[in-house]
Amino acid sequence: MVHHHFGHSLKRLSFNRTLILPLVFIIILIFTIIYYESKLAQLQNLNLNLNYQNVPRLSQSSSSDHPPHNKNPDWMIPKNLLVIYNRVPKTGSTSLMGIVYDLCAQNHFNVVHLNTSKNSHVMSLSDQVRFIWNITRWYERQPLLIHGHVAFINFDKFALNTPKPLYINMIRRPIDRLISYYYFLRYGDNFRPNVVRRRQGNRRTFDECIERNEHDCRVENLWLQIPFFCGQNPDCWKPGNKWALEQAKRNLVDHYFLVGVTEAMHDFVQILEISLPHMFRGATFLYENGNKSHLRKTFNKTQPSSRTIAKIQQSRVWQMENEFYHFAVYNFNSIKERIMANIKPAQQYNDKLYYHDGQQFFFEKIRPRL
Ligand SMILES: *[C@@H]1O[C@H](CO)[C@@H](O)[C@H](O)[C@H]1NC(C)=O
Ligand SMILES: *[C@@H]1O[C@H](CO)[C@@H](O)[C@H](O)[C@H]1NC(C)=O
Ligand SMILES: *[C@@H]1O[C@H](CO)[C@@H](O)[C@H](O)[C@H]1NC(C)=O
Ligand SMILES: *[C@@H]1O[C@H](CO)[C@@H](O)[C@H](O)[C@H]1NC(C)=O
Image (cartoon, rainbow, N blue to C red; front, side, top):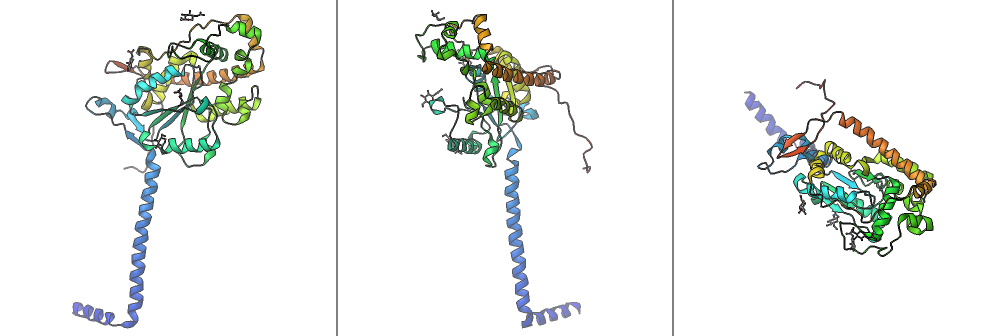
């Protein structure tokens, strides 16, 4: 009875011409809504994928030779981790890079050297855009550590919605760095002993150079670590510029993940390993036990006289570079103290010692309950 009545009204409905138009309209509306809902879901999915490019992924160590790695959360390396080491010349950076090149295969990251034409430390605006665009989208080479003698570039300025890099660097006592550079130009080093250096044949010592007030030992040459941290602005490169010093300090604090000092390179390497194990696991072991084939030693370097040092220390440029150096040391030491207080007994794996520290925070009161 109900069945019959239903069929009857359906028949009546389908033949009721006045109802056909609204019905068709409703059906079209429903299909339209379904279509756009699915489009929206697709877009949301895409958006999620973009956001979650940052999600750590297990490093692809082949589980047969490195089983413990896969179980250790430290080994999750963020896919688009980007580290920039804008190394200052003559600070020991080649030694650190030797370790990085030894580690990259086993820790599953890539290393690229940035070679700027004429060794220029600043880049044109268009080159900065190309540089940032490339390294943040060079997916086959991520995770990536890129190194080169280039001044700090602020990624915020470019509003390209790119991932931001972790900057690292290492600086050195300003006079030591200049003297190393001075003798390097004349005699080279054991790293590439046969390269003919720019001042080859010039046998004057640094002291003699200072006495004669020659170009290579002018205090303006000390002005290098401040501009490297200050950046691409021409004012950064004016020796003695107070603004540049302040900007360099601000960048060090705001944009650098870690800045070590050459005089405490072992600690720098160890803190890199502890704080960024994704890339630097095993670095301390290599630093302590490596074959040191990448340690550079400048030939014929002699210590300057105290008179020479006193003369340099009178200059405003040295005083500012020295202030910056001590600012970096102070920052580094405060980071070091906090980490070293919690350093765990070294883990042993494959006869190598790895370092890590105990996590000092934990999550709690997680709601709603699952
Ligand atoms: C940088 O590139 C130039 C030109 O290709 C080359 O002559 C130079 O050796 C490179 N520098 C380094 C440090 O590899
Ligand atoms: C970045 O530069 C390298 C080397 O020139 C090139 O092979 C690569 O395709 C570039 N990547 C992008 C995303 O432009
Ligand atoms: C130093 O060690 C690296 C990797 O550990 C190796 O490739 C290189 O051949 C070694 N050099 C010497 C001189 O033993
Ligand atoms: C510089 O050092 C090299 C290698 O140690 C040595 O053969 C050379 O005689 C030295 N030259 C001078 C001027 O001291």
